[in-house]
Length: 317
Length: 97
Image 1 (tube, each protein chain N blue to C red):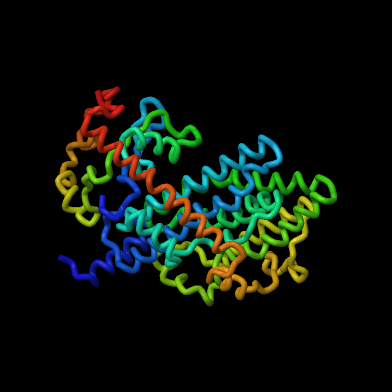
Image 2: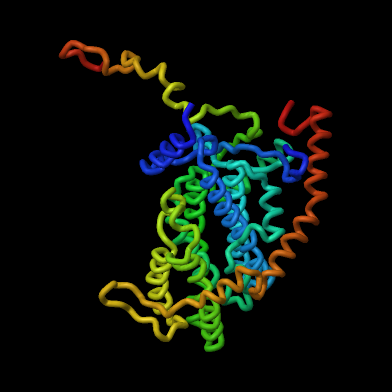
């Protein structure tokens, strides 16, 4: 039998050689805990993220737009479910995760605590919020936990349509009337900074980054990913005539990156701590729907039991 | 399933993408019975034509070998090079073998 120390040494060497950790493999408790925290937070974000967009399904400006929005929201639900499944392989139950979300112990991305006020916000969410998520998720395709990595690969394939549909909405509005342009710019102004905050606190203040990088849970730091997103997105904004709401932003010829003004991390902390515009609304809606669905789950189980007793399920004969 | 868990039993999903190819593990879903499991698997894992056939199996019905036992478990095959065609000498000039 190997000692705990030897096991840890083997584990670290295994990670170092770029192998993936699978559910039944030995892993340090801290790795398991970190992975569960990150996976459940990611899953909750996908599911809570359905709410700001769901708000616009009945008010989409055309049938085409409505069908696209529905497909996108359905994807987000699917992504949440892939990620919950991946988390469950680590020994936490779906119920436990949902209970932690409801009690506030588990977090979700603070971006979804902002409201989607106009149709342009649906454009901004797809382009900026999904755009930021994609930068992060592409990096996570190489994460060291097998089920998480596989979920990320699948999710990235599906998400690129999300970002494009958002950019298409913004482009259409920027080619429209003065009022439509103003609406698009207003959405840009409100979503730009929260999107940058999605990458998490700066590297020198990030509580989890160092160990997560060592275990290859995270492959690139918050600041590296944030800068990658900024560099891509600023050009896309300028291309359709949008102004980035940062007067001091300028292109740095030496580094070949866009330098931005300092981010207001106080706002970030406030929203994470529950003081964002929609924290209460998002969570109470989730709790309400979860509780209202209880009888459906109970009925489905009772039906299944009944069917088994009658030995008459649909797929046996 | 634990008594506190009302999220329905867990199933593993295997998808065949094309005729003639093997079913591949895609992930898992929760469902109360086979029928719901197949429909949920379809909605979660094949929204873009990824499959033509789906298998679902209750997760607790799967047995798996352990990665940490990999060396010993697969050891019996390690010293049997004669299972590979390159082990054998074929006279020069012999074709199509």
